[in-house]
Length: 291
Image (cartoon, rainbow, N blue to C red):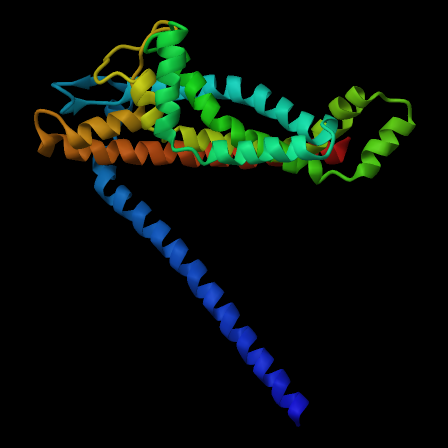
């Protein structure tokens, strides 16, 4: 009888715990849908083809956000071109080449600390290094490098964890067939880890696409109705444009619907980035299974 009562108590506590976890998960999903619903309700009225494809006009109380969309795309691509090779090679070194010991632990701790630094500090560092010291000025190049630094820690950790998940038997089998360590990494390890690596990169880009502080100091223009001609030009960007029209301007009442529309477009871009991450993950998983 005592054993049976103990089992009932365990089942009861287990049901309570699972119910609590389910309730918390539903609360998180509900909060997400409330935020998305609010932004959609407020911003859908401003969305139109003209709003997406035209430049701001009338002191940013009219027109659209096309230069900000293009500038955001430039910054995302530029940061990826910097963060992806640096982050992936660093992750490969930490997992495949560096001797397991104090050095790897130190690099890992520093990487974690780097990922926890506020984005505004990256902005100040980017302004001091890329804008002033290296002479790039307020430009897409300076903004991309700054955002790339923001991405690097996440790409490093994602790459390291992706390579850790690959069994050592795959490495040993490749080496037993006569492949060098570099050939093993290039032809065996990287293709198997690429789905998770790509996912980490895309998620990092999703994060930097909404950053305001780093581009505030390095590249963002308050009002720039034309597209940049080179990587050394300034550009508009959706996060900074949203900040500007929400906090300053000549007619706040007229700008507020545009602010909600800009926020909705930014959310849609982040959603598309996440969908791209899932598509690329499935593509590389199919390639791995086929090979």
